[in-house]
Image (cartoon, rainbow, N blue to C red; front, side, top):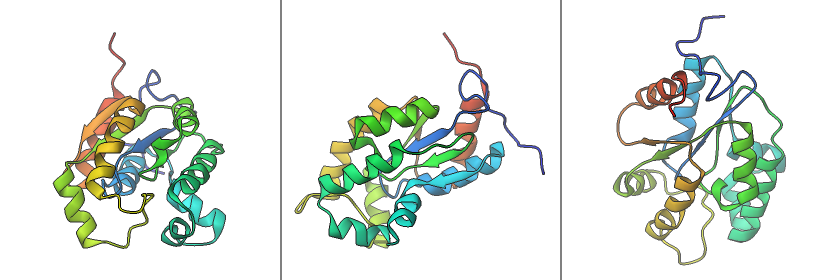
Length: 184
């Protein structure tokens, strides 16, 4: 087993803690999470994959069968039942809608918000329009972005400005933050 490039400072993420990543769909949470997990030598899970495995269906199929509130309740319940240690958790974009789910993530360790500018999110959605999204009928991605921004900010212990750089660069930014002792 190789030695991790970075070790989280115990004041930020102890050996039994997790690191959760939140942000808009298409922000790169899973890809950055995978890179971060490799840097610190921890496993990585994606809550969208946990939902799919729990229900035996693709996320898009699940979101199509439920209204927005029903999906948010389901997602919140799945997140609040996570019983994991020492891993990177990449969440679905709507994970922040249920306070009990956010509080559970925070009880597991620090929450990192990947903030990506709206034009980049829109461009990524245009490339992959089949993404499963918890939205109300008639709601635009722009509306959703504005609605979620304050929820992500409220949940975050650290915000990373995302964009077009390689995921590894963003993962290293999180790892550097994690490796340094908290300041007063």
